[in-house]
Length: 330
Image (cartoon, rainbow, N blue to C red; front, side, top):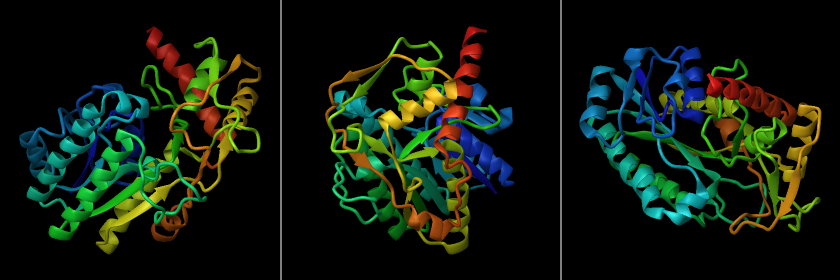
């Protein structure tokens, strides 16, 4: 039996493939390489399929030939502002194509499906920490496209023999501690990545979007999770599904947050110097703070983070940016 990782050439997918392999799983990857990188894939050449998850014939062949019993689904689009500008792209990539993938799984009698959801399904939260029972009110097409997939999985799991785990990510950061993969997307908007690039002189400055929020230092607070811890959560989710045969939705975060200014201070500590930080107006739709309640994932999966330290997250992210800069020059 094998595990099919969709989007396994991307940021979180490539880390999760590594974690699954380390856990002894046979891993197969499908990726159209629109945003991922073939060099980031840690499986053998014959286990990487370059193609689209909406290609029913290809996906069905992979499921049949590789005896796939679980799918870990990352393939999709993830930039919130872009989703506002081009919502149809997100409803195609994140909703319509995922529907095709789910149908292929049902036809192929795949038993377990792990979905990369997002804290964006909560929208502008009013109470913290955020539990999985909080109201769902996404404010962007990105968040709505992810919530639609959660609904599809819930309905399909009730009609067919398919169990699912939907992990609602908070802010993912860092990179593989061994330097095998990391956040490599050009022009990515992740705060820690952008701050590390600025500290390394790859950008001339970084903007802080809003300094008048109702938080201790006036900047937004977010729950940052190391990508390798998030990867291990997917491996734990697979074990849970196989053991219990029950579906679950769970937050994936640490349960505490850092402000933008605190993150920038951490980057300065790791870099050993300051850099140009500029204040800018608020961005529309940014909540003042959002922090997870990770009680469910810890209680049900037995999941314990290994890298819950902001400076460690930043150090790993910084090391990857240095390595990536070298790779891009070759």
